[in-house]
Length: 529
Ligand SMILES: Cc1cc2nc3c(=O)[nH]c(=O)nc-3n(C[C@H](O)[C@H](O)[C@H](O)COP(=O)(O)OP(=O)(O)OC[C@H]3O[C@@H](n4cnc5c(N)ncnc54)[C@H](O)[C@@H]3O)c2cc1C
Image (cartoon, rainbow, N blue to C red; front, top):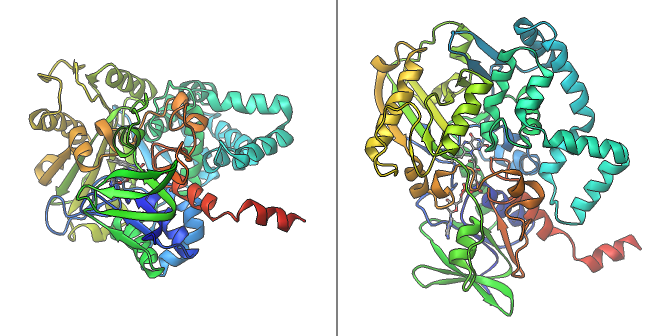
């Protein structure tokens, strides 16, 4: 007799959502995690000083709250103690001259603030919303549908029926536009461009890439409608609630369990073998939350790893401060969840281009996250905490675009990590004069540290694979094997490397759970009769 109905390799958000959906439906599920903590890129820890709760990797949950898994599981997770906090000031960009541009929580408010930067940009914002909303189900549907399946076909037909042939061609063309082209043809003000352009980094793209214009619009609408929610007490509270839900339905979640082989008999996955030799078997499914590199290069015997590309690398900087950061200029910056520091659209473009050419950017786009604006419980009273993200870094370093740092053999040494973090700290300090005097502790995670912490963050790529068009949407994880089914029967691949890609929406885990819970074909035909 097999040990479980389903074995899930890895405990990222996609695994936990998938396991929770299956367990609620009566499946006996087992999640096996190689590291010492559950949740993958969600971890909350006192990383710097006692009493300072840092979200070590991911921090912001709009994708989770906007996703199908949350719609299904939200009430049961709330009953297990999960509580979300939100803000009226989700994001802003602070420009070098000290002026800031804000994205707020209603169409009226955004039209008003954008009009102040350039008369007419408010109307352009409303025009974007008027064009977006009637087809919002299609825009979000692209990201929530198993594209290589009958559901994908049905989705295509729905779009065709609604838009017609010409309309569908136009819609698809718009989806492919770059952020630069969409921003510059929509808004007159460079402030509007600089407000929205940094958000394409959070989709793994750059502002000149195909698709990035569509992603900019999706994110802009999602932030206006959904804000920048975070769980009270840290991202790990979402993991705790999901794990509790799985266990309450009889499932198991185990740490320190490194899967080294997927067991296959007669072309079907039957279970997994751990590094200590133990086997865990499954009758219905083996679900692997891993990169294609690991799936084909390690877990499946005799397979060659595919030509799967990784994206830019990333760095995280965590600060514990003896007092809250005091921003110069606009007082709303102190209340804003995520502040981007950049010269604007061209600044983001330049830093992306430098990173993609192997250089440390001279003027990186600095993502300054301020979770205390919503959740003061994450630091001792009267103190400060910052979550800093840098998404424009190379894995193999050829040099420094600023010509300042010695990049030696081109690897991420501790010395280089700290020197680069010093540059970024200086950038922030130019707008937050009390930063350097109030640092109690600083912990920096280089791309090498990210890879060491989570095997899925290969080369320090936070999104587990390049999201360039040929590895995105219909072609994710890679054109020769798109979707979540694999060449092995009963073996499914989920996680950020698969459609709909990275983020806390749990899209791939949800799609696979739904597919597995579909009634068998004969039952569906019987019901139709
Ligand atoms: C620094 C950082 C910041 C981010 N910020 C945000 C954010 O604010 N908001 C947002 O929406 N997204 C954010 N993202 C992206 C998002 O966090 C990830 O895309 C998402 O969490 C990935 O989830 P996953 O299910 O693919 O698995 P992962 O979180 O990658 O977890 C996979 C797990 O599987 C385990 N595993 C792998 N192989 C094996 C094996 N053979 N045996 C056993 N276990 C194995 C790994 O140890 C890991 O724990 C961020 C990502 C990073 C890295």
